[in-house]
Amino acid sequence: MADARVRDSPGFVPATELKPALDELPALYPTAEGFHDGTDGRRDRFTVDEWAGIDNFPFRSTELSLLAVSDRVIDLAETLLTDGDLRISSAEAWAKYTGAADYDQPLHRDYLNHTLVVPADDPRFRQLEMFVYLVDVPEELGPPSMVSRTRTTELPAKPNWYPAKTAPPPREAGSRPAEARISTMPRSALPDRRARSSPGRREPSIAAPP
Image (cartoon, rainbow, N blue to C red; front, side, top):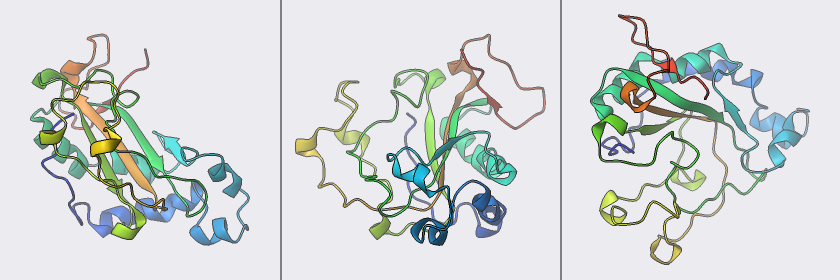
């Protein structure tokens, strides 16, 4: 994965740019009130397990889909990957509700099921994962934590879980508002048979399935 030079940047995507996606969230997910008082019939879906709240791109919400490929997000990815020709390997929206499931996870590296290649230092194969929160996520709601690469560089590729005996104490399980998770990579990290962008287009293409 690319070095995380931007770890936590509140307000990086202004509230005015998040609002259109927020306004369309009820088309995808119950409100907190509808979930907890049982008035939204969709609530049972989110109690199956911690992954049940994930929807894959493109989303039923047009505005949420546009947020995943917004100029602001693309510009950041281009800066961090030092490459202007990007591909999205995956984009997910994830809604979580207090008490619906245990969302706590050990510290881990998201390359086994989120990326197309294993981590590499070669710039051609760098990948970047970003979390875009649609509302504020204070510490008590358990936002993701990051472990410095100074503590992980010498670890083997597998297992991808950070050794429990050296990991910080786990967080208490909690709930978090909807988030969008986006994984991007330079086009050169993909096989040549995958479609190229049209000249002059800034939007990243979605990687074609195998």
